[in-house]
Image (cartoon, rainbow, N blue to C red; front, top):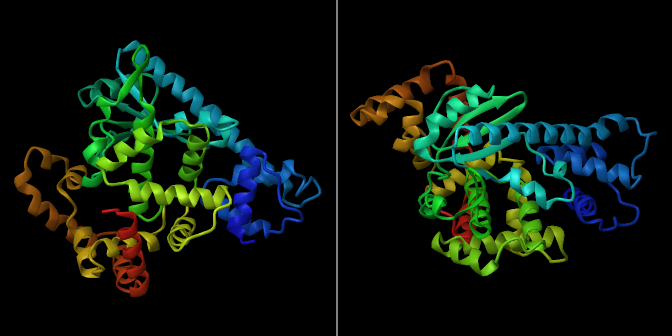
Length: 379
């Protein structure tokens, strides 16, 4: 049994109570290391302790037990922060939609099992200033930087992403993500939710976005596994939405990999390639995966990939140079400034090292990733 297979056995035991195989073998340091890279160490640690695989006599028992305690503490903080957000927006009559993990946690046996320090909230774009002031009045701090689709806020150890849209700057995904307000339903007061099929679509689209950026981690696969188990959404309704963005091949492959990890299905060539890519990337991917997949997306050309890194899309440049929103004519000068800053500024060593790393990426690996993207129909 591989290290990853051992980890999945422990996850299944933790979430569904499935019995562990007899005489489970593992390298604890590597197992915890792998699970930490996917922010799943709290699940693995609790399963090991509950099943008496390790006990109080183990030298690192105290540190391993703290993985669960830290997850519980993070969940308490997140719940407290979310209640403050509700109070702030209710008082100021600002309509909002909670997104992603803050809702998915309810599908787990215990909310702390779906660990995260982040909260994602969507408000109407024309409410963004009111929402910002409302949160500041509630004690949040912010870097006050309006990114492509959000502003970042902080309260204690909790990070809030206040979204003014949920688009990913990807034409394939955004053709439907841009219609989020057409797919919500009221909860109470000013709180709304994405309807269940759109919520599931958003989840899959966000997985695809991170997959294209170097890896999406194991956690969203667990989320979708639980959604499917609990029949959270109507599959036909979800497929209809996925069809609009040509995401059905990706969704089907994701479901097949879920059935390998959490069922009895055997790997295919496609699921094995996805398995290796996702597991190696950690929670949000790594530089090697990101660069290899980036070259693959640019017709396997390293030169074209470097060009896309140098000349970002207009919307991304507006985040770096806010004045561009009013003076688009300055775009060429901003490109020149950015390139010179990257090549000769304080980060020049890191940037030049990255260029060298991109040049050295293995051509066969790039070709394999290009084939993977083609099979998954990701653009």
